[in-house]
Amino acid sequence: AALLAGRGLDGASVALLLSGSPEAKRIANLALDRNCLAELPAAALSALGPGLRSLWLDNNRLARLPIELGALASLERLHAAGNVLEAVPSELGQLRELKALNLSRNRLAALPEQLAACSQLQQVWLSGNALRELPESFGSLSKLRTLWLDRNDLRSLPQGAGSWLALEQLQLGGNAALTELPEGLGRCDALRRLGLQGCSALRTPPPEVIAQGVPAARAYLQRRAEQGLAPCWCARWIFVGFERVGKTSLARALQGLPFDAQERSTDGLGVTSLR
Image (tube, rainbow, N blue to C red; front, side, top):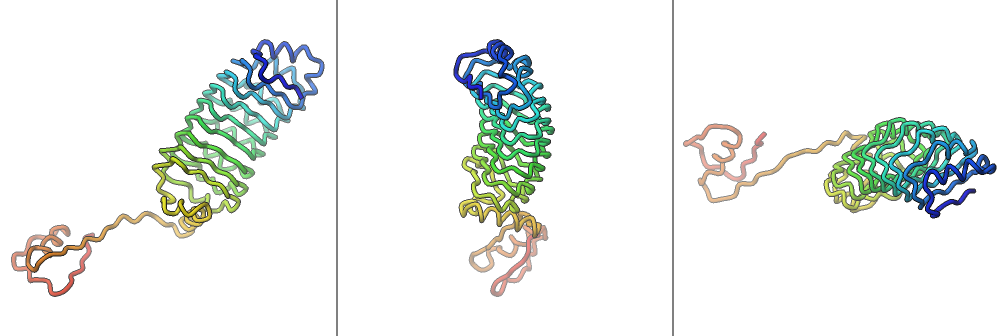
């Protein structure tokens, strides 16, 4: 392992250290977090060997990730939280062995569809960004166990979320514009932790179901998927008053029927549809 964390290094210093080290090709775990990196030079990455398994870049000043990261074929863990990233290169989709990805606390507004090609992903942290949606291709990440999406600007989740059968933790808190969860989540039997604090616009499942816990929320979504449930917007009107004050005439007016001056007084209870 190469532990270069918190040493105040910039990109040029890292490139110099790695390119000048005969051991660089044998590094399996490289920690560069808490430095002064505004960029990660291609020279630094080219000095590394094919056996790199883990790379920590957290809490630097990175505005972008180099496309050369896609060549690290054995990489299993990539952590770049706490930077100023505004985009993710599509080349990260070439990391077919990637199991853990942490891009929390950046400035990401979107993710590339190609990222879903990292089919081994089990843990993904994307908290504290500006994501409005996830690529629909994310529904194919069937090995996901942990997915943190809290404190974003999500409107929806991929409809393919029902394929996340291994998912145990899903954090969505702080997405105030999120209105519904996909019905497919009802099939995610492994789901044990579902964070929805601060999702003030969420209507599906309704708040009273969410209050009963994760099993109730999953059961509700599964019933919707199986029965094709849809919102039914209806109301019942009850007109109460003295005899011959116009209750029946009001009901007729709401039905679009003309006023009948000869309308007889209703004997007992009258029930009619306003559709």
